[in-house]
Each structure stands twice: as structure tokens, then as C-alpha cells.
Amino acid sequence: MRDPDDALPTGSAAYLVMTVAVRLKTLRAAASFAATVVGRFFLDQYAHASRLRRGVSPVRVKNIEHPLDASVPIRYEAAGVYLTFVKLWIGALSYFRRRLGRAFDDSVIEFLAGLGRCYSDAGSVYGRCLSTTRRPDRAPSLRLAFVYAVDPHLFCVPSLHVLVVCYTYFRLRELLAATGDDGRFGRELDALRARAVEITESILFVRQHSVNCIPTALAMLSVILPGYDEREAKAFMAELFSLDVEVDSGDRARVVDYMAGLYDRVAPAGGRPEDRYDAIVDFLEAYDEPVLELAEA
Image (cartoon, rainbow, N blue to C red):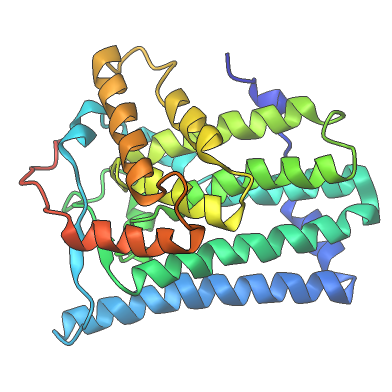
């Protein structure tokens, strides 16, 4: 059973900003991270979108939908959960910084450096093959209208949502274990993982991603965080939709089996971690987009 919300480590973004800003080394780390996000996600994506509109893009765009996506119900109301992926790591950093004080600052710096790498490494794949899914012509909710307005939707594989939330729960457990504090915050860390599962489920509920986007993200994360191995990746994927009575158990098993197989394809046992990004690009370039109609809300 997943942990209740009251175990989730949440703190004030204002408190985190204030504590980061008062020390030069944490301020530098935060500024470097922010520059990476703006450059590698927003500016790069808008540049690709502009070149596509003008018909001068050297990069292909692949529709990465899969027939198994239809096994997951459409729940556009899950956009609220979908949009909490940034709040998850900000709230957790703020929570642990308040409880551990300045001794946690080095962990904040390490956390932000690795999170920035999630964006830059994902950008290295996006820049070689763009990927998308079909969205409704009209946004089904105000929250998704905001998403559609600010996100050109060309950076799907690997999913940054999955990278960010899984990096958050796993990296914080590593950092707290290094200082001997992981046992003290066991419930909070378990709740972070449970919320990462919920956010990952939401990317399929709102049709912002495909089943292809999850295992590719976890394969990339295993390069960024070597401790995030095949066992953890497959255990995480096996938990998806496990508590959802509206997802048929047979369909869920097929989804999990497919994702596990794709993980093995792009992160083969014994393979070199540095080859995994090439494997993700090879998968994208060879992918044949299935002919699908996006289900109505």
C-alpha cells in the first residue's frame, strides 16, 4: 500500500530559494541548473519547433505512440498530478534542508548537478531524433491548456517527467544514506517513491507520453545514477497501475512486460552504459508509428 500524503516531504519553495541564495556555492549550483533547464529544454525545443514550421529542420520527428497506450484509461483530471513533478523535488529539498540545516547544503549542490544532467543528457537524445504523441486539437482542461501553450511537445523519449521524479526519490535516498540519515527519514523517502509512481502513471493518463517514454527514461537514469540498476527500474515499472482497479490486470501485465522488454533492448545486461543513449536513438529512428486515433475524452 502506498504511503499517505502526510508522509510526503514537502517544504516551502520560498524557504529553499532563501537558503540557496545566501551562500555563493549553492547559488552558483542553482543558477547553473536553471540555465541548463532553460537552454536544454525550453530554448532548444522552441528552436526545433521554429525550424520545423519553416521546413528546415535536419531532425526527424517520430510519433512514438503504441497500441498498448489504449490499455490505460484517459483521465485528463490527472493533469493536477502530472504538473507536480517540479514541486516534488523542490518540496523535498526544502523539507530536508529545514530539518538538517546547513549540513545539507552540499547535498543540495550534488542533487542539482545531477538533476541538471538529466536535462542535458535527455537533450542529447532529443537533438538527434524528436518524438511526440498526438494531443487533442482543443485542450480538455485549463491545466492542460497551459501545458499545450508552453510545451511544443517534441521531447517525449525519454520522458523528463520520469527522469526527474525517479531521480528525485532515488538520489535523495543515496544522499541521505551517505550521511546516515536515510533510516531517520524512511517514511518520507518511501512516500517520495510512491508519488513518483503516481506522477509516472499520470503521463499516460493525460496522453502526454507513451509506454515507450518510461523504460527509455529509466535506462538513461541508470547511466546518470549507476545505482539505479535493472532491478530497481523493473521493480518501479512493475508497480505502475498496480492499485488501479480500472486497469485490466491482463492489460497491465502486457504493458509492464512490454516496458521491461524495451528496457532490456536499450539497456542490455552487460552492455556499456555509454552505449545506451545510442540505443535509444536507434530505437526511435527504427520505430514505425502505429496508425492510431486519439481516444476521445
